[in-house]
Length: 279
Image (cartoon, rainbow, N blue to C red):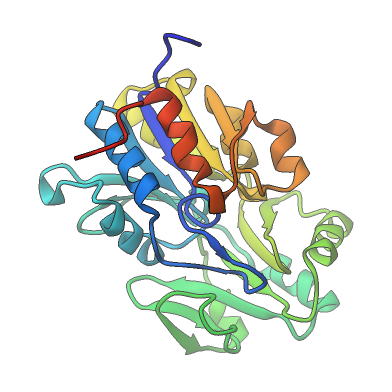
């Protein structure tokens, strides 16, 4: 791959662009200077920069602003949100593709085992409808207390289930026990479960973007650190795991870079776009 250069760079946000606040399940809303320069170098070289996250759209626009990777209304950025269920352009937020599903049965099944779990669904442009408040800093925007039946009473693109008293391993085991095959699911770093439509993940959202841009998967560099990045790393021509990623993510990657605390994403970008030092 010595003469290869990515035509599209897909970047996860939390744990890839933003460093984790250890032990909190949150990330610092700050882009390291080395990473900023590396992303700018890739963009200057003509690569399409696409953010791909489990976050909802309103939780991703500030990161795009911090990176300076859009030209306003002249050339809106492509963004893959909600683990692939929503694809939008920015600015302004213009949803161009969305997949929804009936989440009520799966939510009910999970709550049978975790009756005190927190449930959230995006209220676009405002925040989240929640059955109870999530820990501070875990959701962007306003938390709107809503009856559970109303939260999952109509098709949604993504549901978050969070149990502060459980572990990620608890949720991994529960998802396997329940056999959540009719929908997609991803377990996060903590006891955080994202439910999504079957067959929908970051890779499917990125495939939609790549087709619009005329880019093949073989020309994509994808970087991520979470279980929700596994399909993306497999799909891309070069899938790179962050150094702090769990083993199942590292196993599917073509390469493992440094951790988010060591600017690992910047190191990987510098391999293909070496002019990251900007004057």
